[in-house]
Image 1 (cartoon, rainbow, N blue to C red):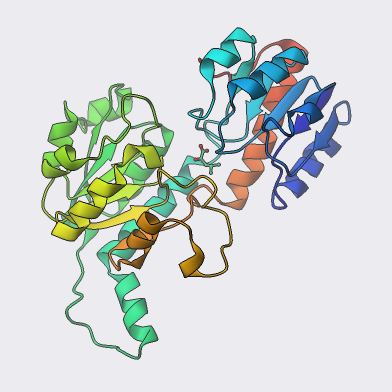
Image 2: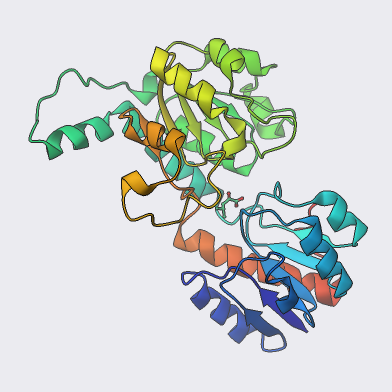
Length: 332
Ligand code: COI
């Protein structure tokens, strides 16, 4: 059995080597290159493909895999929004993801960024760098006095809720699907509008779908409390960036932590050498603001998460090839 792993980064390599050692029955090929039309031919002869990238898995790529007889594509991440579903289906390609490599990693980072916003650490860091050690006017807010509205209560949303509760915040949530445990606790509100109206902080944990593209926009922002904090460790497409900038300008939004950005592909996880060379003016607009924390999609980036992404995706691919089954199959 042969599996080819695409887009393997240096930090993933030791985990892939370890997995290979533990699975001597599998021939593992790997490349640092992403899976696209220029690299897909490397998959010829493999039984399965393991990959992670934010770049789209296009119809052309999936048709090529289909023509090589490859039916198993295992993603090392959660999100499946970059897959051409029709092409995967027509080629009979089954897709697995890693739904829980570490929900806690993302939740912990999200709350870290919120605490930084509330305690104005970005502002104090910038002041101190200029020798200004004064307190005023940067007086902070306390999370234990706030209501946090969690949008989507999947594994990551629930992990974030546990931490918010630990800080003593009031936590409410909206999701189409109600988690039975949370339902018993009575945390759910019935509509997104109720969440917006009641929350001091909106914590986004939804996958990107056609329906929720730009769910944070001029209209929905207008329904939120003045000075609301917006946290997006989920998907850039959830936020209309121009609307967010307008709301930051007006003070409607008091602060934002943006770990995902709608135009991040090709920008995040790249070294441009200097701030000025970052080729995205909207992103730079956000990055210049003291009350906005931009981070390059790093909420997931912990040793445990990266290890699990490699191991769980390789396990899933092997299982699909050898048994036709995996508990990580995605319903496309
Ligand atoms: C995902 O798992 O879908 C993520 O967003 C993290 C990604 C950068 C690997």
